[in-house]
Amino acid sequence: MAVKEILQLGNPVLYDKSTSVEDVLHDAIEELVADLRDTLVDFRDRHEFGRGIAAPQIGVLQRVIYVKMPSGFDGAMINPEVVWADDRRVDIWDSCFSFPELMVLVSRAAEIRVEYTDELGRRKIIDAEGDLSELLQHEIDHLDGILAVQRALSPQAFATRQEWERSKQL
Image (tube, rainbow, N blue to C red; front, side):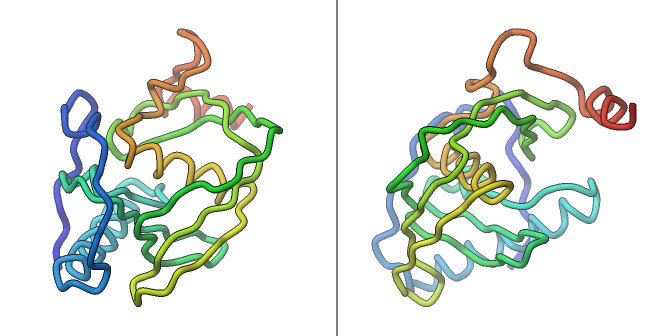
């Protein structure tokens, strides 16, 4: 496995819808998961942020994400689908590997339920709230060709990472 280049804002691949994975246990999927994990870890080491990555961000249009949360959730989610979303909304500043210097204020469901297949081919369901809910919605959006910049609450809902970090210290 290897660290892959992360596609940046404006790359047309990021706006394409991903296809479902048919053979979850195929060697190519195992390699993709390893590439996503390695790329996520490398990005975090260099930029000091990041909790998940979607396959389209490395140019692979398949429904696979890799999540590594400080709270302990760590692994691949293959063919993830939101099967329930809370009506309650939260406004949150979102960041992305595909535009690391930009923060975007978006609205997300407060809680969601996601069905997915893990790396071993087991079907799973996870109820997510807080940071995990926000992250999974962000990554699943990537699988659907939707970027956080497209979900901005208004034209004023953008800040540079530097401005955003400075505002947190006030």
